[in-house]
Structure formats: C-alpha cells, structure tokens
Image 1: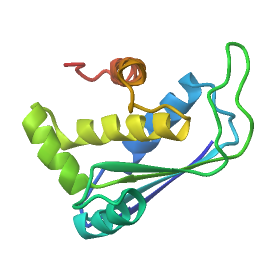
Image 2: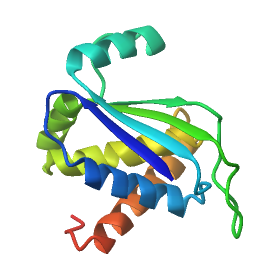
Image 3: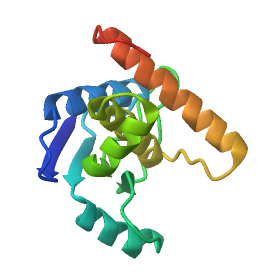
Length: 155
C-alpha cells in the first residue's frame, strides 16, 4: 500500500503511527495492497476553507474525506479493486480540542479521525441512525484492535 502523509499543519505529529494505523485499517477492510492513500494535515484556516467549500459549513472541522476511485471494502477472502482510495484531511488543532474534551491524547484522537476518514473513503456514512451505529461500532473495533496490537492502552 502506498500511504503518504503531508503535514502542513505546523503541528508535530507521529506520521509513522498514522501510516501504521491507516495500513492496519486498510488491511482489515481488505483494501487492495496496491491501493493509494494520502493523509494530509492542515491548520484551522485551511480546514475552514475546505469545510466551507465542500460542505457549505462555517469553521474548521476535524476530518474530511475525499474519495477518488470509490473503492469499497473487499469481501471475505477477497480484496477490493486496485486504485486510489483518496485523501483524508486532518486538522490537529481541532483534534487537540476534541481530545481534551474526550479525556485522551491528541495522538489518539488523530488515530480515531484517520480511521473515521478511511471508513468514509470506503463508503461508510453516519447520516442515518442505523448507518451511524454500524460505522461507529466498526470504527471503535478497528481502533481498539489496532491499539491493542501496538501494546498501547485501550481506554
């Protein structure tokens, strides 16, 4: 898998851990091993521009996903098609505020948002209650199993 991290946020982040988490999520979702993903970290001003332009909503947000080839998860015993998964754009400043409210680290919030963004790229959504439940349960399971495999606390 080709996973690129571009950090234009001005905030130091552990790019290796974002890549490891993204690779884990993509493996678990049976994404083709030659699929491509870009994780871009931007500051609040840049995220606000994206949020306003694409969602017509004010202010910066935590994560946005921009799918390219509309890949979907592979089925049991079968990988997805090869292609460009797309871009996940993160805002570490918004993530830090959310992490403080949630009682965990900014690094853990960025892992959660990376997982969330990849699920959106794979076609998951949370507009309807049933879809929200499915997506958030999958997100929670993926993140907890990733953290458990890394020997990190899963609180």
